[in-house]
Structures are given as structure tokens and as C-alpha cells.
Length: 97
Image (tube, rainbow, N blue to C red; front, side):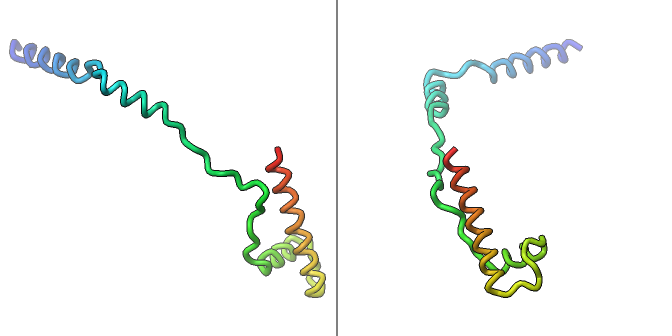
């Protein structure tokens, strides 16, 4: 029992020593780390996302019913271009605020 109490006291003192306050150099390092600000990537305003595949946009618009299945390729192309232009306008409005 006596040895258990001594072992417990030593363990408590050892743990308390591990949580001692940091030295001056460590606090300076921590202050430097906290003062560093993360730079945001440059804004992409004014640039709309690129159109990668017009065929997929056409298929999506046909599936959603915004383009008739019987529409000619020229009509489909016009609808796709109108869809892209509307997205670009919405993107530029979002960037302005």
C-alpha cells in the first residue's frame, strides 16, 4: 500500500511536469504561427467556367424537357448557346455581389 502511494505521487508529479508552461522561444514561435494569414486564391470573377461538352448539355436539356426531342440540330444548338449565355450572366452577377 505504501509503495502504491509513492508510485501514485511520483506519477502525478511527472504528469504535472509535462504540462509546465512553455519557454519564451516557444511562445514566440506560436505567436508567429498564429500571425501568418492564409491567402485566398485569386478571384475568378469575369471568367465563366469553361464549356467542356456541348453534347452533354444538349442531352441534359432534352432530358429535362427544355429542348424538344424533334428539334433540329440548329434549334438544339441555339438552345444550348442560350443556356450557356444564361449561365454566364448568372455567374457574372454572382461575382459582382
